[in-house]
Length: 392
Image 1: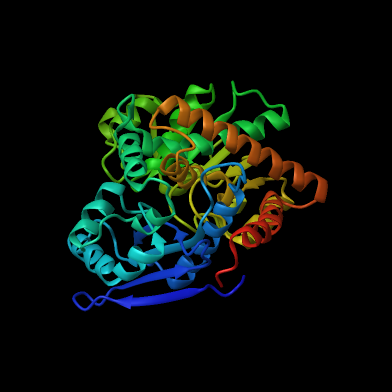
Image 2: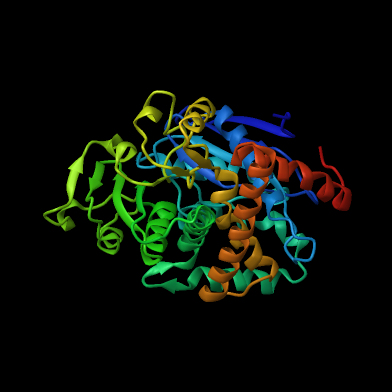
């Protein structure tokens, strides 16, 4: 891994908690990457995530599009978002990082933080917007901001378009892999870890495509039903952290310990919650054929090697969950409008092309999908740099 352009560790003067900002690369002077809050967040974690953002941006480079990929960055705060001190800590972090948010780092929701919360804290910290650094790159910043605000106001069956975009991309990644393998959707079973923004939307899109979600895990444990869970009922019973109210469970739904989702009888596992969820120990329990990384860095590298030896294919986060970030920029730059059907069609088309390119490259090179994705990035970064210059 290359050395990042900028790496900062900040210590809060009130609580003593730490926050981090890593800028891996700039393109046209700007980098993109969300802000996460979780207990135990480290600089090493944020550094890896920032590098992943550089890759996600490069993977969506289209020289004919209005959206020009940015560099990669990431922010992180070591705190439980449920802590009573969390919001004040978030405001102070953004106040400390204000020069970077104003000039070069565009950020938004990530693990533990909703976009509404980030927006409210950013305003309190004196920022115009969490993405204001990109405004100078827009042809018409006022129209672009209005278009993005309109898109965030769109709801589909009671859930915001912004909360569905990423899950649409994850689901399309699953469907593309199934199609390539000649596996029908009907009868294909899925287990999802995390029913927050990404996991919940993924479960909804996969269910509507004809797959069966048999297990869902949240902070309270795993909910299992081999015949299929009522995904819509579970989504409606979530709190703001993705925890399901167990009172909505049906008689055939079983409550099991937290890691039971790993060993569920499913062809597809979707880790959509925390990083490092699958390690060298618990990977042995997995019976699925595919692991689709909706979360960032959920499978440890050593575990991925062991899974590959057992014939389990990991579709990597840098491709699978890149739809959220791309949707923001497609909308802001004007490649798509504030319309759900247009957004979903664009996400599906782009993600399917990317997954098929990755899997085709992996097959041709005799490598893993992750190695293939890295190879595509290695091809594209110099092209982007030649067009816009190197900022390292």
